[in-house]
Length: 193
Image (cartoon, rainbow, N blue to C red; front, side, top):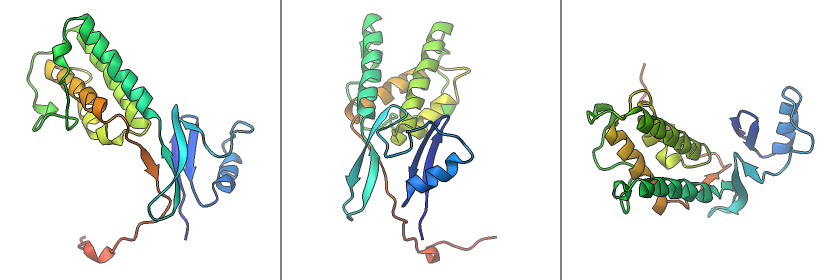
């Protein structure tokens, strides 16, 4: 039994399948793709892809180069903070995307002014893009902060800086698309109505 996995984003399709070319040609019958672009992937959403061999010997595709984008985003934030004399706002290092126990939904710090709120919103957009190109380890944190786009607070912005500090040290992560189907013991799950 074979399974297909496809990532779709606007006009990009990335598929992991035992016969991906045939499957993409089938999709092409209904959703026309650009001529000559069906084949082994080089890039997906601006991130470099390459084949890798897993420890079990299976070949898989991995997103490799979002490191460059992550480091550029961190550098832009550091430069912005330095230009305002606020480099102290960026933690030197962060072991986790959020400080221990931080809950943005109960934050009552002062609201950001209009200019700071716009900056916060743009940083959430950059972090969301990082999630789309493989940085799923910050997805929950970014989503929690994104729910405060309409009324961001000072500590929400500090949490954004904390995520960037985390990314500075964890910029080289990669996401692998393992085509093997996991063996799950369904007997471990309690049957419920």
